[in-house]
Length: 520
Image (tube, rainbow, N blue to C red; front, side, top):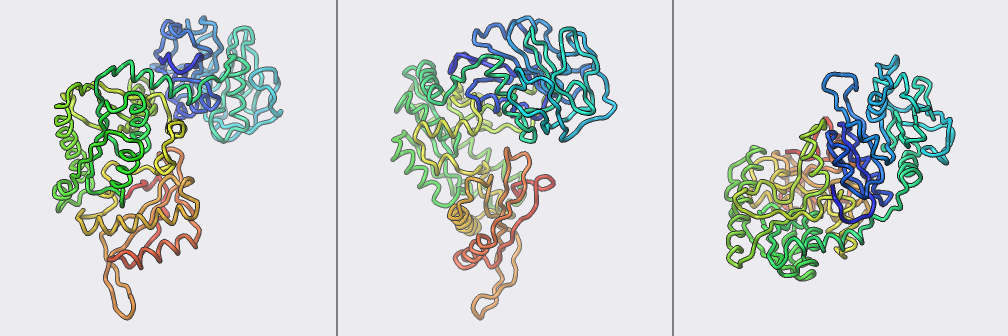
């Protein structure tokens, strides 16, 4: 548990809900610091934090009465701080304290009408009927001693409950999702009205404390940082540089499959603008030679990942000659940390993203991860505090293997040049239309087919570019963007006229699932 950055802290125990990160984000939107902890967390562990103001028990897919279902330490109820159980969390409270949970006669999935009976605390200042998001096949059929219902639905008599004396609350629905009306207000009522939080967690405070921690950890030693020019590594690098100055050594590797002018922009922003100690390694020829003749997407990924590690390792060894190079900085974010921890709990691990993934353990660096308590949107706010330009902070996600997985077929100089130019036009026009920030990703894909066309009086037989633009919250699911026809028209016209080797543009209208965002 983190003891810096704030004077108050909310613990969220993870029982496997797909929404657990959303709960954390809703808490932090109120400027209250929180962390997601494994369900095995004990009362003793929680009591170690002098800043603990409340506990939230998340939802989860299990049935509390099933064998092997996640339980909780009963002593947690004796800590003396308010507790809120959501869905499975509410059922777990009831089950643990002597109530009864059974299979519901009528399961509730989706929107239900919640009728409120008591507006005095958790449901303070809300309307009498709310649309709430339900997702349960079990429900509480008998409340533990000392509990009373404060809201219900037509099929669930205990839609929200409380023990007023012990300040223990439960809701059968999910207040953290956008589908629940006034869900944010319910969480705010718990944090401010019930837990007494003041909302003292700000990015200004985070910057100061994070810099102090880096100084304390590093001392007069040196830090190595892989800088990609993406949001996470950029913010981490600038933060560390502000703390330790030229003792930070950043390495930027050009793998030959970057976006157009990317290497120039990164060098200009960070070497010239922020005066970072930036070591540029142009390994483009090396990477493209390794990719010669390779068409299998998984092979491409492995080659680029493996080669990156070797290039980075070589540069690291060269820099070790400067002496005192003891730390490796990474732009690890809080979702990465949660997913690592979740392997010990009931949540499924989906994916982990690190700035410099797969580095050999024998590099013998100590890790320094100044963003590991933050979500992506919080990293952007932090970047604003550090005066990082919007062009960096609002960059759309870009795959580690770069344009190589957006070129279907062989990756060679000619294909890279075609896609770089087409992709650059797409980005330019999406930005001109004022759509760049609202779109999760927008990019071009070079297809391994040629089609007949006519340019002037001549017949052509040239390449096809597929345009992909999706909206998403987290990249796990995505829907294609209904781009205005005028924008599609301009993009298509410019690519065909300005990019040699392309005579056709098509638009991908597939959602995820069943398709993925990237084509490879």
